[in-house]
Image (cartoon, rainbow, N blue to C red; front, side):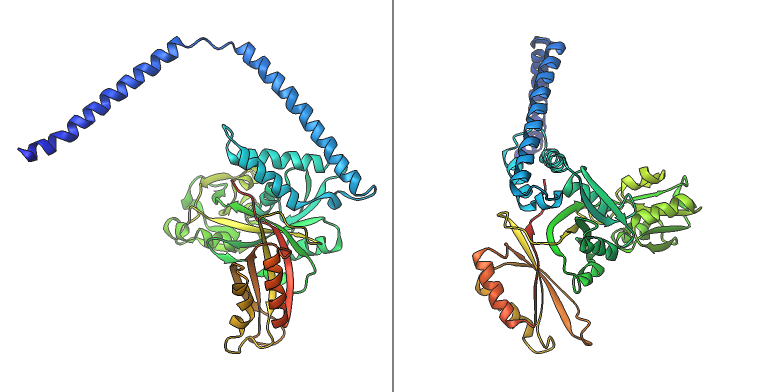
Length: 397
């Protein structure tokens, strides 16, 4: 008897749930019929009034931005007015007060574009990036700076560094690490001999698309993409195109260009590249990990003040990196002053064989009291010590 009751109970519960669901649906239908009809003209009139207020407020904000610039210098350039720590604070406040229905992602994008337009009233910032058009690095430019900038596409990471160092570009954006494939070594190595500073970071969710001029996968003879993109899609390629040649190229956009011009060539790139180069999307979101994210550094020529939620990147070494306990002794001040280290990478120092330098990310700004004490102690122990940047952590939705 008990067994029969236990089997029939779920059916009874399901029946009751179905009855409640039908009742709720009927109540909603009655509520919809009883609701007063919407006067579309009246709603549109209210929208127009709100738009006018928004427009007036935007112009007022632009005028205030002009006053900020005038108060700093009468003959300065736009780059002199740019303050990444202030922009990060504005974005954090916008995100904190957002009550919807707009999503945080949309609110952040809107405020980024407002700040970008206000800053560019005299002249746009010039931002160098790894080109050609259609790369994820170009997307990172607009994600961080908004669209009111002059984006300069360059053929290599080295040239991005050179353009910023020479002053031909105000800032540059370069990839530094991917959550799936790790660090971009070429970017790290450029800091060994560059005076540039890191003044910001961008975290960009990466979706890879397979694209080409062919109609089906069996017509693909080769796949071109940046080596990182090929690695991030390795499992998908092994499953779907196991016998197709994989060709590393300088950028995903270069792979898309080749797919446009070469018979039998497909490319892996962002969806924007398919639009720019007129290619068909053959497969969408083929990255192996759903959380695939790339982090970019914003390069500049000076350090900025704390924003309240910052990260610091260091370049350090000791005289003999092969000595037992050398790295522990070097980094001990971070533990003593309770500074959290979030990343460490070693690279050849190019001074002698088997000698290394270390790139370290820590939480906090170099001007924060406990961080400053830790860095001072670390500096006394190091044979090489440089603060590559103290910058706002990426503001994400």
